Image (cartoon, rainbow, N blue to C red; front, side, top):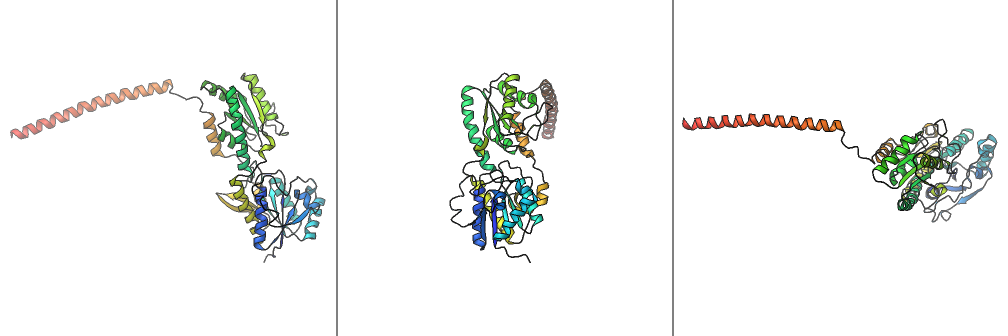
Length: 391
């Protein structure tokens, strides 16, 4: 029989994401409902190392469901990567009597959970929170929907001015190693072209040809969406070592000017995508995941990642979950290919015309033959009826 859970810690780690506050709120309120004490850990794993903790009540999470960011603050901890750092963290756990921890973040946060629980008797549960939606074991991570809507709203506004001046715009969205956000936003904004870090791109095929087709189809303004990690090296491989400074979008803009002759404008959305009030989808998913995480700990679970899968909230073993790689939606890729590759109507080819002419001639011959047969049958029937009348 698993021991009774009396005290749970909650922290946010890594990059912040809209919906983290809603998840913290859900953890605290579920703990109150289950008669479990909840301890807030500030600044991620650093807070556990430095004992930056406090008791959380309903008052602490009142009116935060609609707030972006995280009231617990967040940070990446290099010290926690070391055994010495994790030893300090466990000393804090022993001092305040923590039975389990709910950690909200990405793959790095979960890797920290796994290392910690493998060395010390502390139960850990992870909740995916990253705007890149790049947690391979979950269909959805907190913050993705809000970030996408923030980017879409900004791009729609940029389009208004680009359309007025008949210009080309290159928009850089977040996505270091993952192009989920860029692909999704590209579909939603009707982009002319979209470039992602998972797929090395060819400028002529993936950008220039689409710009030319769009122009020949009557377009006078163009929108190119670029993930920050989609910069290319000279050898054709992806160069995403340094991101977030607009270098990927600027590289594309330079090529557009040199090879197509347009004068593009670069817009880097940057950290605006991380902020803002979370959408209903992020608030509800955060509440469901936070509740589920506490219930897992209450029932004796350890080393689990809360995830959404096939439309439901469930959990997966942390080791297995971390092995699963993020992949772009194949369906979205097909939709995007169709949307960005359909500026020019394919139209009938010469072969199509010849085939249609043959079909028309063949149909005419068949109809003529049928007409002759039908006339002969009618005449034969009439003669038979006349003969019967005479008899």
